[in-house]
Length: 410
Image 1 (tube, rainbow, N blue to C red):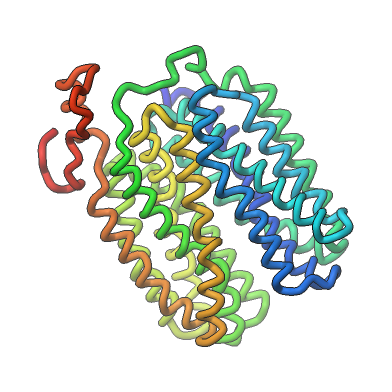
Image 2: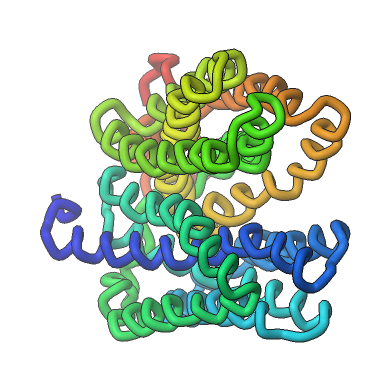
């Protein structure tokens, strides 16, 4: 397979590194918001406004950018988006006045929105049919989220919010690498980028629902896991931070492992197993006594929750073979960011029942994903039907849409 060639894996490592740098800026915004509150005197509403600016900038435009990328490859767009993401987030700490800070955070989000569809399309071209190769790209995002608080906290503690300027450099360096490699990132840009087959919107919508469920759980855990350790388990700040670190590290391992597993047992089954296993992992995270033993289940919860991540990205592009940019814009952008919009509802729950109330509710949410996952379809189920229909597809039907595991033949 072409996806096993050393040159392909080299490109995947480049895209994985670029994804890590890009999502570093998504993780940087929540890491820096408390310092704006402390140094600039922003209220909680203003602080929430900065998070909203980042979410609006990154989530809403991504499907539209995906449509644009599908019409024209624009190999420079991922580099430009990465540079904008870094400049916006990095310069926000130097800006005076809330309006300018808000605008810079919004621009950073727009840079993220420009990066994901273009990079997702190019990474899929490099990965071919290997979910394991695609997981390298997907895991880069998990690494970026993990590194943001790890790198930002000591710098912000020492130098204040103006330390965000340090984070301009990684974006510019990685953008330069992508720009130099732009003519090698779309090997089929001359006209062969479209893959054979029809776009399957119904299973893509089901997949999007599963990704939304995953996103809601991710934001719920990542927002309240430290507070749970501090206020319910009465742990130290160091141990509470270790809980979040364990959850995020488990996410990186789950993303990489999910891609490898999917190459062996299939994408749909991997997504179904990961979603189902998230339920007991979250239950055990909540009910295990003590402050140390639950760390194991923080790792497991992160791993199971992210087991389907790379699978959903690749599967979405398989469902929309003629619109890989649009698929990436939804699975990497819009659906992933929905959890950030739902997070304030968890805040209301925590206000009345504490962070333990949030962690008690979270295991029920993946059950919706389990139900939706039963209707996911392995792309190979409709291949023979497409071949039999020929190029015209006269009636526009979508053959082979039986739920996975039904045993129906294409």
